[in-house]
Amino acid sequence: MDDYVSRVMEACGLPKYYKSRYPHEFSGGQRQRICIARALALNPDFIVCDEPVSALDVSIQAQVINLLRDLQREYGLTYLFISHDLSVVEHISDTLGVMYLGNIVEFAETEMLFSRPLHPYTRALLSAIPVPDPDYKMDRILLKGSIPSPTKPPNGCKFHTRCEECMDICTRVAPDFREIEPGHYCACHLYGGADTMSGVSAAHMPWYSDRASRREEGKMRLSRGEMRSVIAGALGASLLVALVFAGVFAGFILFLEMIVFK
Image (cartoon, rainbow, N blue to C red):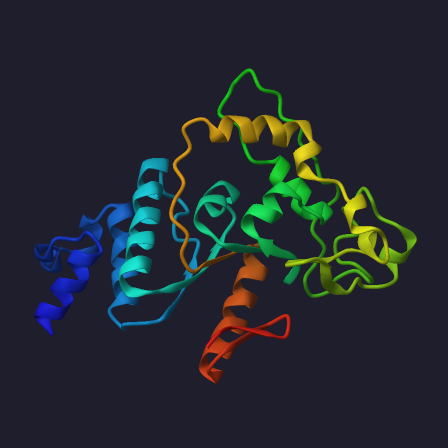
C-alpha cells in the first residue's frame, strides 16, 4: 500500500517524502495536487473536477491544468470540469454546457459555443472575459437586476428577468431545450421556429474579433482529450454534481437522451 501511495503521488508531481508532512505545510497548488492524487488512487474512469483551479494564481493554474491533461492521456480519464473561469474552460474542454439557476441553457462543442453563442446569458458571459490590454475598452454586456431565488424561480424562462431581449412569451412559457443547429443545443425563444442562421454570431461582435486575434498570437493549444466542461453558478454546480453521481451509480450518464458516459 505504501508503494502504491508513493506511485500515485509521484504521478501527480508530489515527491513521496511529502507523506510525512502536515496539511498546513503544503501550498495551495500542492494541496490541489493532493486532491487529484486522492481521486486517482481509486483508479477511476470518470472524475468530476469542481472548480479545480479556483483561488490559484495563473502560473499554478497552468500547472494543474497540464497535470490533468497528462493524467487524462496516461490513464484514459474522462473529466467533468465545473468552473466559472471561461478563459480556462476554453482551452481544456471539448464540449461545454452553460448553466443558469440550475438549468443548462446552452450546450455545444467548445469551439462552436465560443464562436457562435446563441443564448443571451452565454453572450454576456463571453463578453466579460478580460483582455490583457489596458488600452482596450471592453464591449461588455451588463446584466441588469439580480439573480432570482432558486426556491422561487420566475415563471417562463428563468433568465427573462435579466434579459434585454425578453419577449412576452418569455415571461409565460419556459423554452424547450432543443437542437438549434447540428450539435448545438439552446433553451431560448429567440430561436423558436426562426431561421437558425439569423442568430447573432460572436464573430461579428467587436469584442470577440479583437479578442480572437489577440488570442491567436502565441496561444498554446492543448491536445484534445475527453474533457467536458460546465459553466455554472454555485447552485447549478451542486445540482449538477448530484445528478452526475446519480447517473454514475446507475451505470451511465444520460444527457439530452444520449448516453455520454458508460
